[in-house]
Image 1 (cartoon, rainbow, N blue to C red):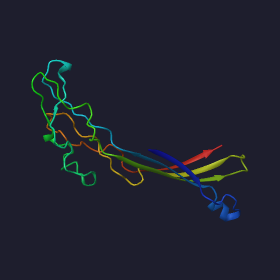
Image 2 (cartoon, one colour; image 1 turned 90 degrees about the vertical axis):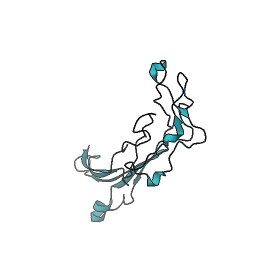
Image 3 (cartoon, helix red, strand yellow; image 1 turned 180 degrees about the horizontal axis):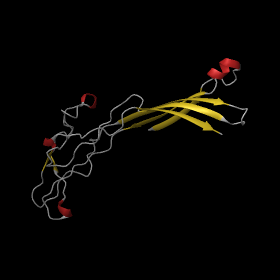
Image 4 (tube, rainbow, N blue to C red; image 1 turned 45 degrees about the vertical axis):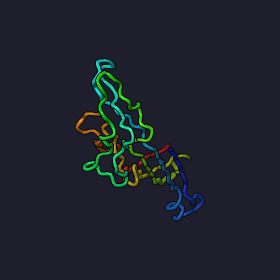
Length: 179
């Protein structure tokens, strides 16, 4: 879900010094919330067809996700996928794991961007002439979104998460002349 908004703060009709200070302020933001994408396993390589690529067997009754919740996940210590949930297929057979696991997803993504804008109109030069000072905050709450786990069966890093998939908070200041 993505939502964007802009709100001009009240004070448009103020005059004098108060109008100069309080007039022309606006705030805006973009919120972007997504559930993770479905995960599929790969890397079984025991058949001469399909370029040697095959899916592994899915072990029935074993959860594909390890016992780690997203709120306490540490990529340096924890493994996101359970290696006991999959096994190599028998020789010259196609693995039973589907292209995507129905109940297994990458980490959710939550991001908020925010802007504070001050426009000062200078009508002596031209009717719409204004200067704009703004502060933009990308990833306002500095949330970490982990990348997808290694899904290649047989890899020593199977189930591990390689790093961060988003950028840390960025603050950008800007000055612009509009005419």
